[in-house]
Length: 215
Image (cartoon, rainbow, N blue to C red; front, side):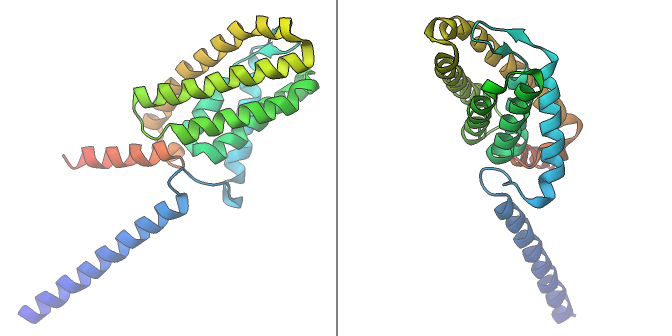
């Protein structure tokens, strides 16, 4: 009888170890910095890029540097929070760049692709935990990069004076994007957790939920 009990315990321990290994493997495949783009994620990236393009086009306020203020930062921040730096970088760069092409600002498209894409990567790499202070600090750093990037691009396209006039508007756009992006991510995280588990914040959020459920 004792031998049977020991055998059952050993079998259960083996199953637990196997499950733990699978969990570690899944996290290892995801990586410490969120999921990397794969063929299976192409539909998600395509849909989110389209959503980002539409959001960028919803608001179009012309600027002296022959550009326009918009709501692209909202989706750039959300995508980076939810999906990590790599997927967020693709979505954040392609969506607004496509909007430039569609709305008749082709001279900005390549700058937008690089500046907004790097902005999203900065957010994804610097924001590691679902905490207001961490998210705000990392997002502000990315926002400063964006304002600087567009300032330099504006000098190339329209000259120093016009680019300087654009700075306050770009700062406001980044600030609004941070506020709405964090609020949107928080709402989606609560309403549909699986959508935001590809990024590092999603992993931490899931762990926090599991810990809370055991209390």
